[in-house]
Length: 178
Image 1 (cartoon, rainbow, N blue to C red):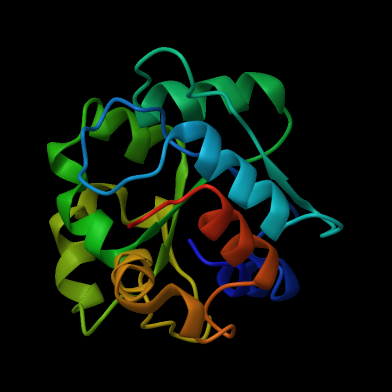
Image 2 (cartoon, one colour):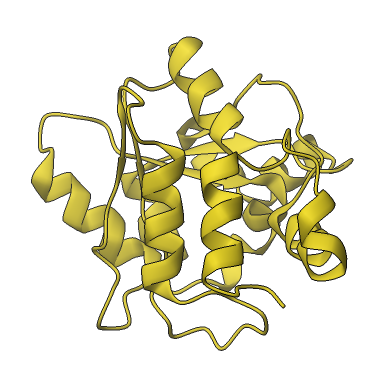
C-alpha cells in the first residue's frame, strides 16, 4: 500500500491509525527485498508521519493474515481492526487460510485497483458484505511491481514522485531490485 493511500484513509476518517506489517521472508517471491529491508524502507517512508507505524510482527515465523489481525485485536481490544487491501487481493481472499474468520471478525477496507468490478467482487462475499468497505480515495495506478521494474531499468532516473528520495537512496545503497 502506498503512502498517499494511507494518508488519504486517515485524512478522510476511514481510520485514525495505520500499521504497516511487512510480510516475513516465507513467500519465495522473485525480486522481493528481505523483510528487514522492506521494514527499513517503510520506516524511512513514514519517519515523522503522524498516525502511521511499522511493525515487525510477521518476522521470524510464518504468520497468516488471520493470525496478524488477531494479534492486533489483542493489542487494541477496544478498537475495530481493519485489513486494508486492494480489490485485486479481495478477489483472491477466498483462497487464503481462514478467510471466513477474517471476513467475520474484521473489517476489510478495499482500495480499488485497476478496473476491477467491485460489485462483482463483493457479491462473491455477500454473506460478509457489511464488513467490506470500499474506500473512496484517489486511485493510484502505480504498483510496487512497476516501481521495482523501473528501478531495474534505470534506478538513477526514476521519477521521485513515485518513491521518496530516502527510500530510493536506501535501495541504491543496498543494491536492491537489480
